Image (cartoon, rainbow, N blue to C red):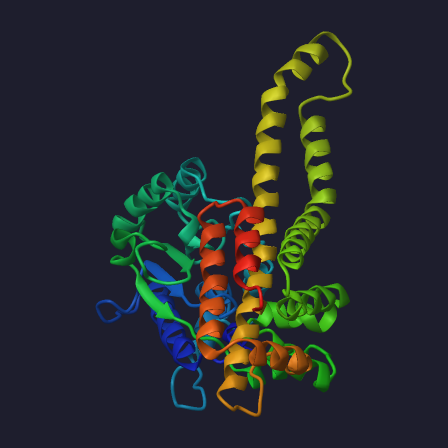
Length: 409
């Protein structure tokens, strides 16, 4: 089983990445390769759920694969040399598990990736590989790089060390996501939303009932991770059902404000549930590392000196909670947007709903209450709310404005 099998519905991307993995193995072995065959900076783009980070980690595993030479000595079904990335060797396993010493992942827990964090990563990337064949840096959500962090990364990409590869993930190549100077130095791999039937096959392979897998794949709207969550998590299904019930209930201004409160409070509760235990354990570990509970002359001084570190930790924890709350709200807004897409389908005479057949009655009620122009305006309002929250508008204000705009006549 190849590490690239995890890329669902991305045949052209897999072809490009396997060729690059072969060329990289040739470089390690000292064999000549065509000019441009090996790239030191990659940019994976695509909508949420398309598999940007999956593609980056798969390429990282292929670059480090212990069986590279053995695989290159064989041929696949198309007569090509079999690409590295067997998925079975220790290197592939450790990369996929996030434990390989020469593969570093930068995953923003908060709202952004700061310059100090990026400088530290760039400094470590300049070292020669300790155990693997390459130094690999994976930057998930590269669109969250601050200006300083982006400039620090740019310097490393402009003059990369000989055996270092940077793998960036971002929604698009738009300057708002990735600065032009970084994008121009990267090889771009565009990923598409995987089809529902391909996602359903993966879920069935995971042991999920075929009917549940088919429903989750359709409801996830092409997001593999969300499909898995909907298929396995009853609370996730309940939250989705509550969100989809909102449009038909917005018959008064009071109902609009109640719906907004529910959306924001549900997102806050989900964020708290995800971070509560982690926050406590992080705080306890830091206090212990700073000498909490110790005795002796230095104990009091150590306790006084720990205040700054604890304050910094609390700041990072608050940023992480804010990010999780926004992510939860964004998932709800995506469901609302697809609800109004189904409204438009009904108004156009389509007999099949694209995403939410289980709420067909509510979709029909809304479709009869507004015209096509009204449905389009509401869809635009949902998308505008997503953008407003991403631009740091307070969620309660943005969502209250949205539900008021969604009110039925």
